[in-house]
Length: 324
Image (cartoon, rainbow, N blue to C red; front, side, top):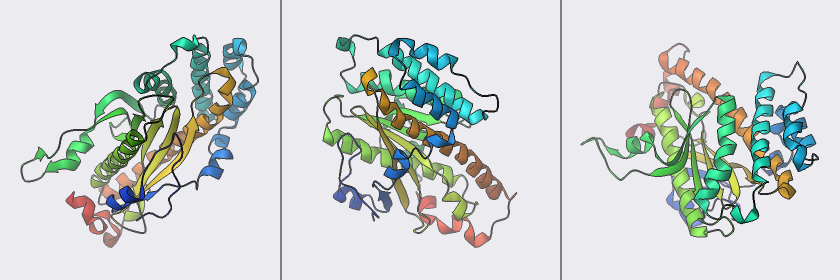
């Protein structure tokens, strides 16, 4: 079932009504319901010093941008998360400054080159400074896929492995973020490729989610519904962040939600687009911190440290996940 579905947009994840029907019991929300949150910078405003840095940086001439970024004064009472995001911005925009020196003839022309040159540094900076994610890049398999497709009668994988352009994992080696680059060319979208990768991402994000939930099925269903897996799809020069979680109103089904989308700036004249990129990163940063607390609660519930009514435990409510 699908609660809401927006018409496809250029350089965004693509999914058809027919595909939605075939993905049952996946409950996919593909809509603009988070558009207002994005343009109001709802997540970015949680880091006011970082937002102030970016706002001022937009008016700094390119030759003096690095000096401005690294001499920007941070007040002594700035909280640690705000300071982390300040440093994320500093590193990403310093890299952007360097790329702005490049001869236009040498700009990336193909999907994989753009991925390594433009997408990887953005997320790697967030991971390095927040220490909430580590990354593996380019043709990365997941253990969750093997677990999802294994034949329990023979303990052999039922299908060949799938590989992803990026994989983010936490300090417990738990995979949290699936990443795909789509379209082959950065200036012309391959719609079929975008559709295929959107479906691939939905399946993979469910696998990550199910794998973690199966390890904590003694926790309460309400707490398990708070667990999220994340995905990023890059179509041409645009990235979209999505989340996948259980549907609290339909046990055994899922909600896949497109949260934030942004265009990666390719030159100094398009620098204002960094605002949307950092709003996307701020949302991911905030959610990853929240997920640490969610996992702590789920672990305490599943080990008996926190009491849970037996009829509220996931093991009795989610038979579909157990049988996968």
